[in-house]
Image (cartoon, rainbow, N blue to C red; front, side):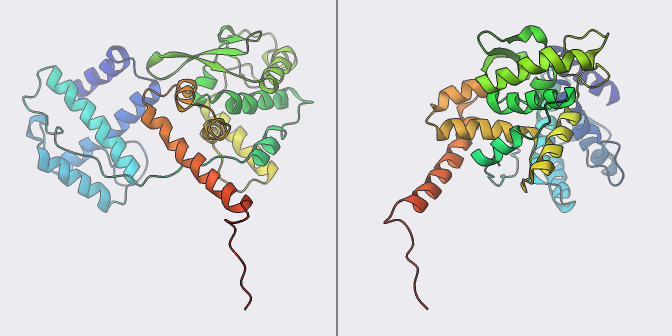
Length: 311
């Protein structure tokens, strides 16, 4: 199994050009991870069932695995991710002629509870963007990061891998390399462009020192920022501004999409700017926008307001 798994991981990296994030998640879904407690990976489950060959896995095995994960109180989203990894793995096995039948063909993932994405209001995002102290190099960097995440809707992975050559300050355009190495053009407004200009002219040279790097966003050691550090930056300014919502870098992407639709942007334009392969993925933001429209309507229309009754 280990040899086949190694070949499959190589296939993900080279054949499918999957991102390191996808490769890591698929690997952990199959073999488990190094956290304490019962391993939830597919292979450890097969070992407990004394199944020593992938050919012995059938539909009942997979149903038992799903039921076991539910008994372990694994979230539906995590179960779906694990099944996606297993499905991809078995497609590979069948393609390579290592199995005759694919037991995953008629296995469906648990139905997910549809959650509306969290986003910041106009007042919250304004407070949030003004939180960094731009008198310091790190503050200039942080302002540029927050402004760019909100102005362009970049994924955090796209932000950390951003190179200087990808930004055109004259046209305020960014050539983004997204999922599966697909390129798209992201845009930014003047406030974001101004914040980036200050950072590139003042903050970044100070942080970089005598080192050389093509990375746009760097730490105080002149090295490229990692995703975990971006999350810590966002968490810090959430605390400083007193925003009670849980704010992640992706929250700013949600806010970007929601505010565009609230402002009348076409759904397909938002899809293109977000880099979504399917319009269905983008459509969830229309629910948020409609929900906001309803709140505004109920609060503003004189005949829609609920009349207060005297006791």
